[in-house]
Length: 163
Image 1: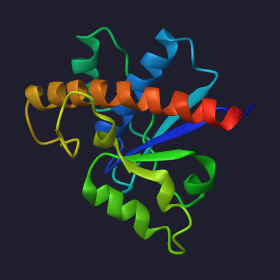
Image 2: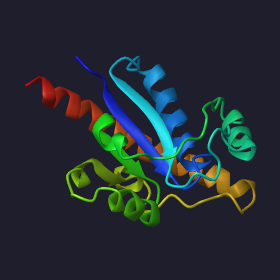
Image 3: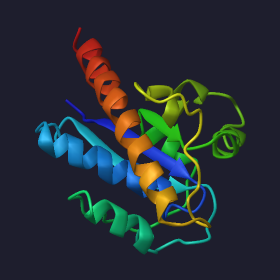
Image 4: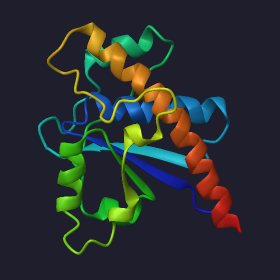
């Protein structure tokens, strides 16, 4: 059976989306689900293509015992076919993703990351790029919450596909 594929998307693919990808991968490893669910991340812009995760985000993650890896890439139309679920970090990126879906074939695959939060009421994952360390910690807290709900959702989708 093919793994369930998640794509996390923000603007530059160096802060929020690689954080979401790495946090989810950390959860998948802890639950021994890395063969059933795979993750990637992308940006709607090409600003940072090839760059690693932002050093400030990586430092905030290290303080919590996580290592962030990856290399920024830009979202492409083929991602609609390649992924089961595409998770936008904010409304602007949500709209930018859907703008590329000119035939409206894939809108059912595109969701907001915060839709999966269990404990927080945030509607968007804020961009911490121009702020201080507290912004990176807030993003990690928010993504930890959303990832928990997302993992539960993905497992349910896998189980449903087996029926």
